[in-house]
Image 1 (cartoon, one colour):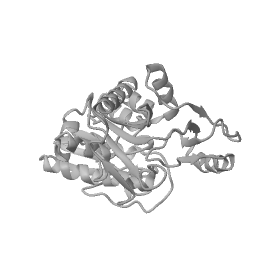
Image 2 (cartoon, rainbow, N blue to C red):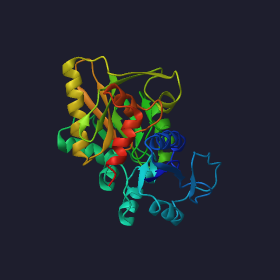
Image 3 (cartoon, rainbow, N blue to C red):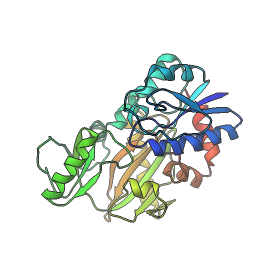
Image 4 (spheres, rainbow, N blue to C red):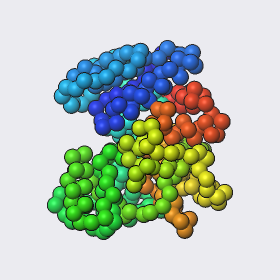
Length: 312
């Protein structure tokens, strides 16, 4: 089978996506398929197909052009290893659907819902998934509550996320986060950071993240030694069950059907708060979905094979 691995792109998670794409392509080849990597942003917005990822040196930021279509339609299946932007918000998935090309992952509407954190918050609340209170932020508004976490509504990998304890910190954080687009504030809840992946409806073992800093930011996620990930998480049997149930509930509520990874805060009193759900989890050596799958007895190559087999 000829497999197009989509990786790279224009989002703030571009470099992470390239790492995911390279690893996925190697696993797909190990499965006996012919894999090539398509980076829609190389060069200067034109599509470029490679057997290995290449570094994009810059150029104007623009939407994906029609140049990618021949590469997509030439493949028997498209494996999404894009993170953020049009690769995660359902737009490219919708294009594959229109072209009649089989693609991995969830449906495009569900991925759009998961990518928009404000929308997913409303879905959680309506579905009984406990989540910290939140408020959409206006451009020149003050803090609706403190302490708070300021977040962009449509970014991943903790890009543009800040914990604020004072009005001055809040103002600075809002100005920085606003560069990513629409922003909101979320009530800061102290507790342990736990991530739970769901694979085709089945929640995998929880992973505890112990960051070197105040929270699991971009640097902690992708720099060796900046965080410790423990899988399975050292929680009680009841807490593990509740976390898995909460992840499955968030997965269902958003209409996801393939893979997802939901992030939680587990308080000292045993309360569980869902922060967000990622519908296109990372596939790098440090990523949490492959780590949880391995703890469940599923190798990385097997994981890629399961995802690829269910492309539709």
